[in-house]
Length: 161
Image 1 (tube, rainbow, N blue to C red):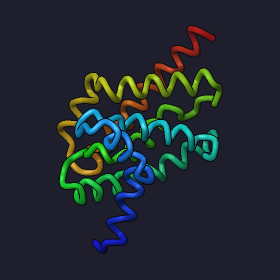
Image 2 (spheres, rainbow, N blue to C red):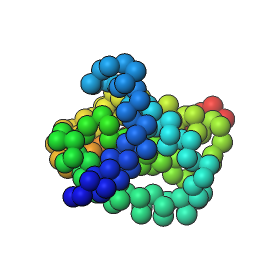
Image 3 (cartoon, rainbow, N blue to C red):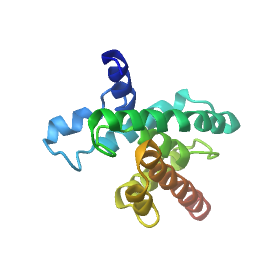
Image 4 (cartoon, rainbow, N blue to C red):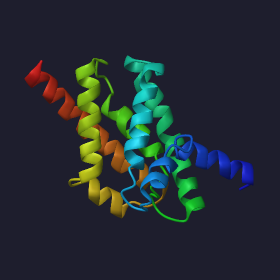
């Protein structure tokens, strides 16, 4: 892959290099906070994304793109699910928001549940993360965390609203 193509893949996989910032601040190689940074950027983009069925179609189109980008970035970085890859946070958070009204409560609940599930990785999320390789493996655990967060956000809205 050319230097320009490598740059483009790293740019897209890292959320415009936003994932590089927390590691620079903390100096950590693991638990850098890049997932949180990627999730915050994904949330900031939500107002610019379509709603309803069009949002679902957008996410369906973004899914294979994110798998390809994550796989290429993993090859470039030389590690599986490198912390600099945060495109998985985008599709994961957006999965958490599928078919939810974009109210402040739903946005906050989906974000909090997604971050908790993505960080704690309860079964079967952890199993997917460790057993599936490549771009699909990088993305699928976040999509599952997003799906579970979506259900929990719906339950929270049912209970509290």
